[in-house]
Amino acid sequence: MLHLLVDTSTWLDLAKRRDGQRWIVAIRVLVNQAALELLVPSVVIDEYGGTDYEQALLLIDELAHQVPLIGAMTTRNFDEVLDLLRAGRPLQATDDDHRRVVERALSKRAPFHRSRNSVADALLIGAVRLPRSQDRPVH
Image 1 (cartoon, rainbow, N blue to C red):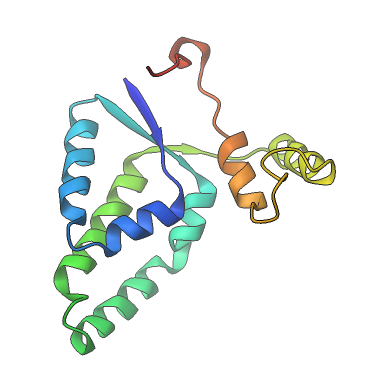
Image 2: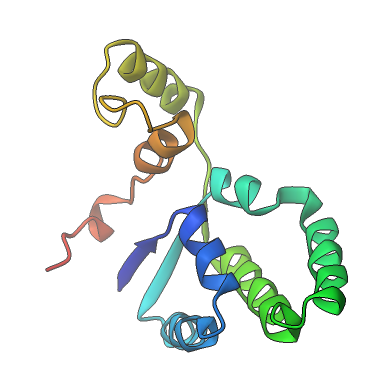
């Protein structure tokens, strides 16, 4: 099985695209065939909308009436991406993960070796630990 972790900005870009359904459907099919498992750190859900997601959808729906290009397809994309995220394997960062991220930032080690990276990026990377039986490299 392939494990896939996708950053929040990529999910948002996918949801906004008019051709986003092409990718969303392909991901959903692979998930349903158990060929792909989405790894979903809590930070992705929080950044995607968290508990205010329904409010974000209402705003998108309101904008859809004002700007035809947003329309029903984009709203559908956001709904389907959220469904994929909710169906994925949730990954929760531990206190130890947070501590390691802060230590990396203080010592300016990757991913903090450049000014544009953030704690959220580091948590995305640091929180992904699969059980050993599933920890195989993808070629």
